[in-house]
Image (cartoon, rainbow over all chains, first blue to last red; front, side, top):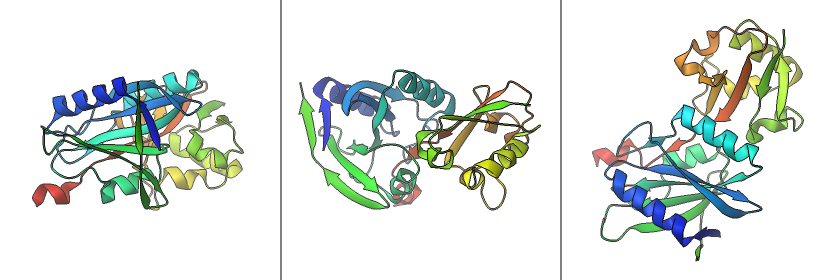
Length: 134
Length: 99
């Protein structure tokens, strides 16, 4: 289960709409498993079909979180033409990235964003509940 | 010549849990060879069989991504610091764009 404050979710959805039709991406940091901070990341690909964290920005964010003794809880990104389900590309990258949760938002219907979360372990995708807290 | 190398959580199984290790070498390639002599397997997680930097990792020398420096041939000097991070990417994929 992914627990996420409503305010963070609102920011993610605003980010998703702003960057559509390109994919957007970002990370959520946590302490003791509870979400603390959201980082909207630049998509270095600026692409409607993929995202890559900008390497310089990612170094700054990683260090900021590590120095604060926080961890990375989740990575989020959008699929702008397809459903919010991990692609083969996502599953491949999940093997080498440090995130327990992959939050996907689909913006293919801009009037109604689809938002779903998954754990991706050893190539196996398991959908999980998203619990929105106040 | 001592160069500090910061290792991300996901690769600390190769360093006995250490966050940072120290090594030596005049280039990044030489440094990774040196590290691999004490932390066996680490080099293989950073460099492909073809000898290129793996796309799943970012390596920084003094906070500059080596892809924008000299890649694996980036020159190193005593006191430089090297940071390894997992690269992060994903997305719907090109197959979708063409459909």
